[in-house]
Image (cartoon, rainbow, N blue to C red; front, side):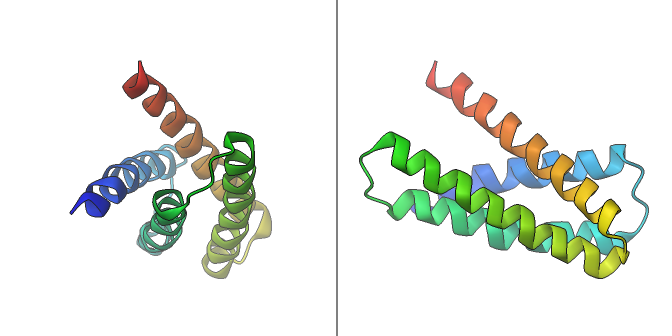
Length: 115
């Protein structure tokens, strides 16, 4: 049950933030929203499972690995968007804005919880 709690909040926040960003960008294709939700369920849960099960005690190493994993997520999600959009520039635009937005707001949310 603890794992589900650990995974649920970041996933829900990511889905809300990235959906809001897509709405703000004026996305009208439901397939983009469904793709975003599906990709985020897979990638967000994967990264957070890594964090949950990781026993890396060095904070710098852990942060470096998370940043590398985030880069892989951006690549995967960018390719996913490109499959539907058939436009590399738009796919890159969507994935960078959505992932940067959710990553930054997620860090801010964590900082608020810590303090």
